[in-house]
Length: 283
Ligand code: PAF
Image (cartoon, rainbow, N blue to C red; front, side, top):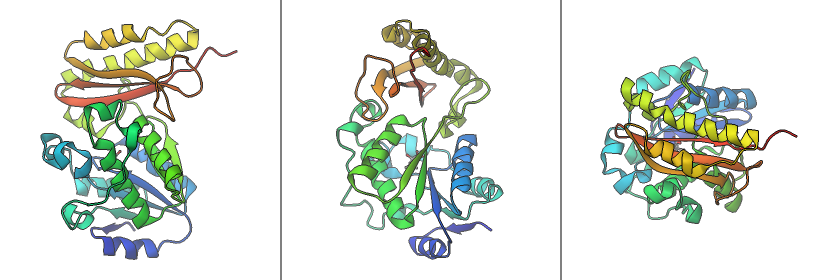
């Protein structure tokens, strides 16, 4: 049976009843197949699974005083039904007051320079909000492993760095991107796309796949050409497309084990991100 905890006290009591290793899947709800994959892996690797569902105002523009936060898709009953079917032990779905009883925390975890580039350049403070809430979830739940999707490559790199820098005693488990049949990476924000916008958005995975194929063929990447393909696509506004090292997020000029092409676009008012690994031709 899945226990739904709405307060910190309820969570602590539910977690105290868990036996063996605990896997945590932090989410903001509006769950989809990508989350399903995180939960399945957590269930395979741990005795118990906790999923948090919290649309964290700290990681939105103006600490949540923005339409992106207000319109973020929320359907707790549907999400809980989805997680019950997957056999999740505890769902932690706190209210804003339960998470931040004083309104806002005074003390934050800062993501530093890694949080200021790429996504962070367009969304100042976003990653400080992410690291602060994730540190709080780690502290409350004390999982053995925590599961993060590779779609949010910058978030994953920053959380891995936070765990290393602050000595959180847990393992971060990255989980590969899940794509729809049309190639679009699964995201809660896809719910905002009209069929026309979804069609327009496909230029993102196609452009990244073309970069991946050029890398695999040993051809010059032509990143600027890829940017131009996104800039000139109908209905699309390019935010960024960069080739970076997956761990440090610093720009790299060579393809190789850690090289990642990361991109963000806006389509029909919705911000979408995606990335691909850039591997050299097989020897
Ligand atoms: O990736 C997300 O859904 C969020 O950034 C996270 C990790 C749950 C923190 O709010």
